Length: 375
Image 1 (cartoon, one colour):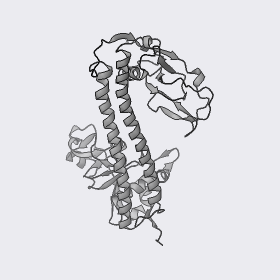
Image 2 (cartoon, helix red, strand yellow):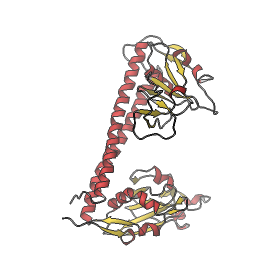
Image 3 (cartoon, helix red, strand yellow):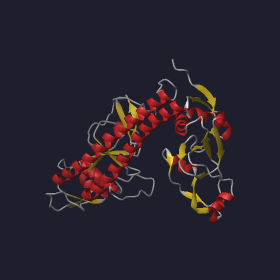
């Protein structure tokens, strides 16, 4: 039987120090020089820090408490985005809100990255003081981690690195597809490019000529707590879209497809499955003329430049009066098919991404606790 891993204090296997911030009022301290990592940079990075919003000069470095970390230093946010991690593969400096951790020979850098990612809730709770959590170098050094030998550390880090690379590649592919969709579909829905075989003139219409609306009163959920899974999705027209689920099957909107429209923000989503809504500010938009394509009109609306300027309802007062150019129904449907093809590819990859992320969580739970041993 394999021996269980020893629990060790992190401080016995690393050195750690925090950074500093040169005076922002002194221009000579900032400019081309050393990457200077802020909380914002570490929050927006992936596994590796490759770029920063600001750089500091040698003058800024020598006239502040900032230090230059060696390559292969693990950066840990101690407050604000507490527990957020990134690896610096080259020399960087950082603000005082970030701890630079350098591994000794007994500890593999990539293994430590995954250990601190997995045990982030435990680490951040150890810095709890009143209502706010902050870490410092002493708290981090006293933190206990399981420590297999270097060979097993490397094997674990390599396995998790492979799934991370798969996740990153899938995310990049989704982003590339989204950008390609915009470059292909936007000219089509705006009539700047035509699909082969279509030559008819486009007509000018208002959105109210094309779409009728229904108020959401009958379809509102009666609770603010949403389930992680359930019989009926609870939607919003905003960025989050799927808020959760409910098992309340009374008052489900099922006259789909529809455009779910937020009357305050003018955000909209094309929906082709039954749902309930959270906000009374939503409207459900459907076709007046069944020969038209709702999918086309949804894509057309997503390309309308309209900036809400006040907290008020817009559909009746302004948005529905916007004039748009539309082709005949056949061309609308052809364009909608192009849009749908892109959406299908994006949705397929998004489902794959979710599976990979769940797989990673399972792997971390098995590999970083010793439940499954690789060597």
